[in-house]
Image (tube, rainbow, N blue to C red; front, side, top):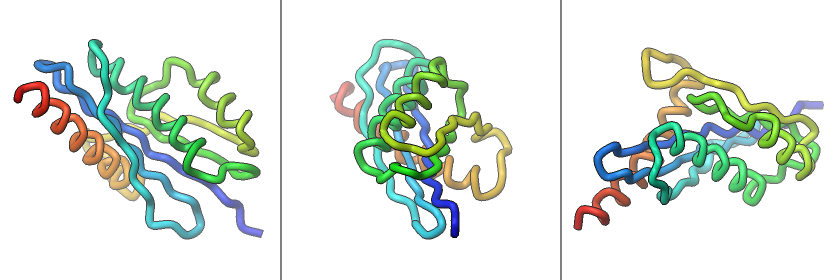
Length: 139
């Protein structure tokens, strides 16, 4: 029997000048799934670290709401170390995941391969929402 894994790639984009930020996620269910994307603008006054941490919380929340994780292995990749790794994994487990982990995946700076490509896709979604938020602030 094939192991069913739900995998999410979560990223944030932050504009230092306007404090506009966005988050993005690519959600995959193995063994077959082309990957759905989710994201949105972030309302915060912090820095890029705050944006990344908020993106992780939003991504995990969306993952719980949108994916059937019951009895499945859940892996979340982020290009930042989570401040609350235990809390986020416990939250996934409390919603039925048979196992859950959040892995740091170096992105942007020379990363290659399938994981890097999916993370770049999440980054593009985050950038789209950051730009929309920034443009509305500048209008």
